[in-house]
Amino acid sequence: MNFTRDIPQHIAIIMDGNGRWAKERHLPRAVGHREGIQRVREIVRAAGQMGVKVLTLFAFSHENWQRPRTEIAMLMKALDHFLDYEVRQLHESNIRLLIIGRDDPIPKRLVTKMQAAQAKTAANTGLTLVLAINYGGRQEIIDAAKDFARDVQANRAQLNSLDEQSMSRYLYTRGLPDPDILIRTSGEQRLSNYLLWQLSYAEFYFLKKYWPEFKTEDLAQAIKAYQARERRYGQISDHAETAD
Image 1 (cartoon, rainbow, N blue to C red):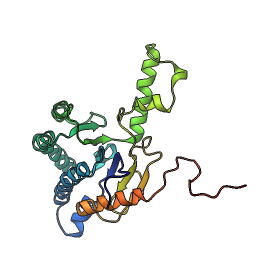
Image 2: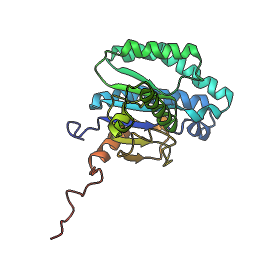
Image 3: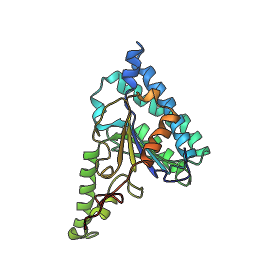
């Protein structure tokens, strides 16, 4: 595969299937999540080596708070461990970490660690790793609308100045390019309230493997599929026949 041309600048991934992977193997769900974290390590490293500039991972959704308390506690513990031990490796690898989503009701101790991790890696110039934690696409758009309204009230913005470009500056992902491709594992084919604004023109790539089974070669195959597609953004295909 030629990794020197048409590499997607921004890849977004819905890491789905940790629990089902574990269940099919008669293992606790926690084992599936641990395997999922290992895949994160591998895919982050591979994406950087392939020339991807931004990798956004759906780590914990706004709706995930409805899961059993024991699982939520385990996921918060995994986040705590990541912030304590994985961020150091990210920093040494020149990776910048961004975390998007609402802070509340994440424990304040973890929010403080999240802020410190982002500050620690802010000047890094390699891959930007974006973790969507306590994230919801609809919630993001609501928060952006409220921020714009506040700017209008404070005379920092004019109501008729709002357009797609200026709206993007109020999103959690401001300053980042929109994803070129969305990858979702586990066979599910839906967005699940993920990056609803940003994925408007992204290519979608679904595969039946669970996230703990997702390997570097699967990422390469997704990029290959992306390279084979023609992105028209609503325009006529370059290969379409023109009428006289």
